[in-house]
Image (cartoon, rainbow, N blue to C red; front, side, top):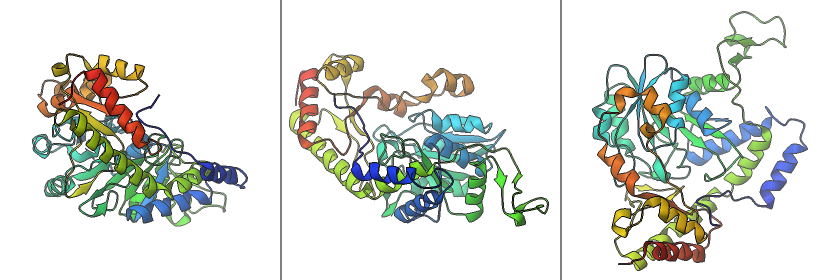
Length: 386
């Protein structure tokens, strides 16, 4: 079975983790800072804090930026639950905008219409690895004096106007290292910020709210063993074992990205050969380069006489695993209950995108022959070409 995504682990990764297992410190050791520094260098960022998951990274970013009770964030309906759920963790309300039906990324006009005096942040998701319209969204955020956060869990290695995602002007950028992402630490995440004080707060929050610097303690310490728990934090640390794997994976990231981009190009060529223009793909935009976490296609299922679930089932019978990214937030009971006032508003872009989208297999070990097999299987299931 060709799954829609899969980790790429080799002997160098295994050896790196084994070496870390033999080291004196399995957590809170030197590999954490090394991984953070390597990530910062790669994306062109000033400060990086790694943590236990992409969800933890979102929670830390929201909390460190002071988003809390009575505040609102604005984000997309086409995203994983954590983008919104992490806002609930800090007591904030989520306003759900609409998306560009071609890309699934935030529609700027729909975001602007939702800004109120309670709005504290716009959270842009780079769906499938394709960067959102960050110049316009950032300009809007600065003009309205609100924060701009990038949920870049799909976009490590993507570029926007010549700059890697994470190296731009956002107040915080969040990455994920889940196994299906571009690199993996098993589970893991990172927060990128431009302010050293903000990094200090994130690092403090990820470790129970502990402060160890005597100059920053409320009272002079009695001795070297003393630390202060200054606020409610969490155990969101990433272990040295995970960071060892992350460092090994990061060294291969450009290779992984090249493979994903090459496979995406082959998909486009094969889909055009078999289906002509009948099946859409993620747009290629001149000012940005996707990291291709996903390869999504847009299919008019009604035209082919089969519901999406039937298409997915028949593809699975042919050894092709697929997925849908994502069920819109307000179709989940949690988000519908948390945001009752959001349910009535129309989101035609999201409706259009969700009704047609399907994620095909994409990961670095996939071969060109696998891609051809996926496309031929899709042709077989849909029953017609151009």
